[in-house]
Length: 178
Image 1: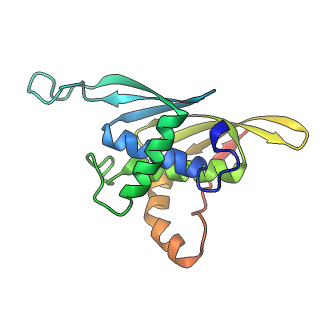
Image 2 (image 1 turned 90 degrees about the vertical axis):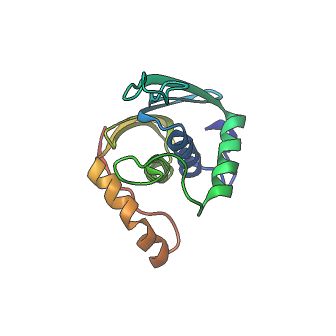
């Protein structure tokens, strides 16, 4: 994440949270996320453009967005300004702003791992994440982690208690493999 290096307010947690808010606003489902050299690719299933008439009800189409670094910066600013307001979009899995909250959790985990080269996909509320681990000796290798829907929902529900109990981020502890 080239443009965010060294900036204290911009990290994976903020980036993914803001892109999650974008996904909520666009009413995407079944998210695929890929880090590019100068931005990100986000793909999901959504209602077709202009698809609010009876001919397209219940129809989903694949929608793909390339989000360059400067646009992600704008999404971060927009999401920060909207915090605490009523979320856009409709609830997913019964939770308002599901992707904003779920992707924040994934981002916090990526920050804790000090990972890079992030790729993940989401299906029915569960996330499978692949990251590249680097150490002082160079690249260590790829790591896979899974956040189940139940784990994500539990962490979303526990987030207010974590914020009240101590400063910092909620602990994200998915099942991981190398």
